[in-house]
Figure (spheres, rainbow, N blue to C red):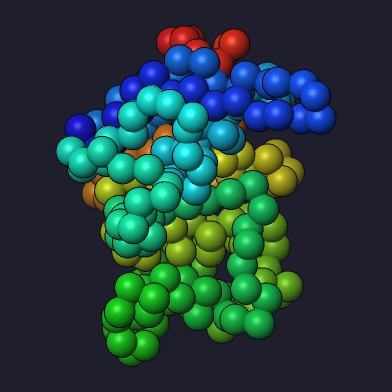
Length: 223
């Protein structure tokens, strides 16, 4: 098992109002899984993903990654985020002053790889994702779909055990949305066998997943 989330609870205080976002959320993720989490806007989908990605901590419950119990505050959390987890968000969060190659190489260099090896790995991934003619382009020279592919390549750079994607096509038109979904499917089912947990409002696209859960009243329910 790559990741197990057990009985996660998360509450926010907004002014004088107590908002229970997660009440008893549980999820097991095995190698090769493609899992989609759907739910209404504001239901807590992104919160669930952020906790699994060690970007936020639950009020209670357990998160186990690679057999080890861990939370966002753990001293080992940054290393695990960089080594074992990849992230794709609705907005690409690419560094505008870096080329596509440099954006993808960045997490590799943070992990300690030489610039030469990091750039070679970045270019390899970008070519696999159909961006061989965009290696030296800056984000503002790329379409929305191309920027999201660069973001996906960056998520794959360190060969993570799990990629967490938060509304990866939420900012794209239908054509580019389909391209990104097809790409994610090919990475999951093809030679990469990449494991994904995807938060999405696109219920139709989610049907391609191995498992679909809906987040209702803070609990993940098989859909």
